[in-house]
Image 1 (spheres, chains in turn purple, orange):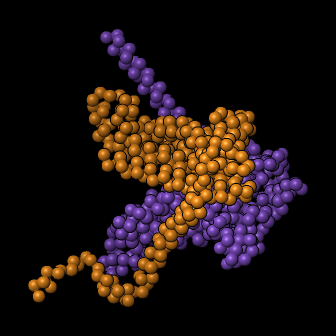
Image 2 (cartoon, chains in turn blue, orange):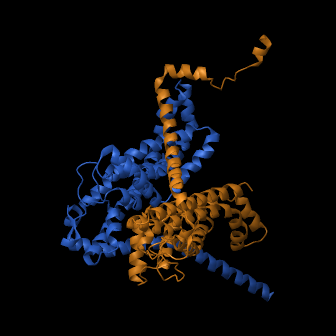
Image 3 (cartoon, chains in turn brown, yellow):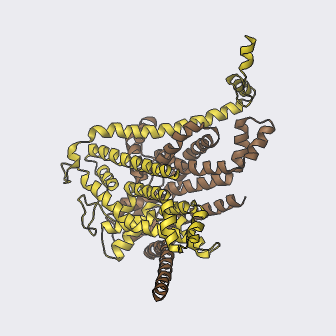
Length: 293
Length: 296
């Protein structure tokens, strides 16, 4: 009797201990986000304060040797490159997603879907290498100059965000009730018209969420961009000029920076992080709206 | 003759090419739209195939046995030390990330009550983590492990950074795998007198294993391909890092350094092909595992 009771209490104890272990594990991700926020802001904010928020965010000169730390060109660079990536990636990705969801024969789908997944799995350094070896020379012959430009970066980033946009859009299109499509068919619309003018508009908030996610990917992309964007820290005057992004700024100089220079780079990371948090927020709002509507 | 023709009934839900052609003549827009989506899909696949073909064709001739020597030096940009470091880095990261990821998914799916506040917060933070770009992870790892802990550039610092990075991936895939286990399994186990813990470890986890495994393999793919988060955490020393506190470059970082130095183009091509094939194999393995075992 006693041994049974002892076994039972030890069993209870084990249950409780493990429950606590699971709970703690679940809290790790919260802890990680808190730590990341804390450490970035702790190390970045003082530098922003020292340089002056206005001088830092809107200053157009980045010359660490002269104590000039304005990251406005980099902010613009990130925005230009991301916008370019969206212009390239969204039409292509959305149309591919529509093909996969509503036009693709089943047998073909079995090859296409893994192919799109594979596109997501290729490391960004390999994309960068490909960009450097193939896209840059092509741009050089087409547009002249060094070939490392906003345009080049936009094309490559557009390709890199394809899987994100395809994946999210396809899911959104598939989630639209079949009755919408059938209703359109019954009213005499062709298959293509029904899909494009009824199904796809009904999936628009999901597709928008995919685009926002793509924006996040593009703005945070580092290794591929620094190899093909040129990295000049100045405000570009055309899309054929080189540009430096926020991410590129960090990678280029972090290796040797010291003192205020290093803190300014961390502050660049903070700005990037804030951008990403805003984009994430937008994404979750869109996703919630999709689930509700 | 007429009998034969009568037997060739065309089903009314099938569109013959003639019918399709007539339809498209009435509505050219439909044709344009169809061509657009088909061309887009072809273009997407063509880009992928071209990328893979280019890397393989340019890389394979550069794969020389000397690249797999144990020593890296200025004459021979051997990728072997980086390859070993990649394996070590992957193992170290997985040791940390897999238990935490699986345990937290177990809590979210099996223990937490519905509408639990904590669950919502965990989900939001996991989503936030998965959206953070790798360079921000790199900065954080550098500041936290490198500077605050005083580890400098170390494999362990890199591995812990990577562990945080793949944590949301493992959590999400495990969660999905756990949720797809039918409730009857749990009820059966409880009905036979098993406790919660025994049910989780002996009934639910084994049947969710394929999903979890494919998530872990995807995580491996991430670690293998990662560069930006590792440059400032585990550093760029091109030696086999047997001590976790020493610096060592992984394959992806190795490749970046080769390109950055611009000296060993051939070695960079060869590294690219090794890296690409590794990632392709890992991806294929992941979907194979997910498909193979989910049928049981």
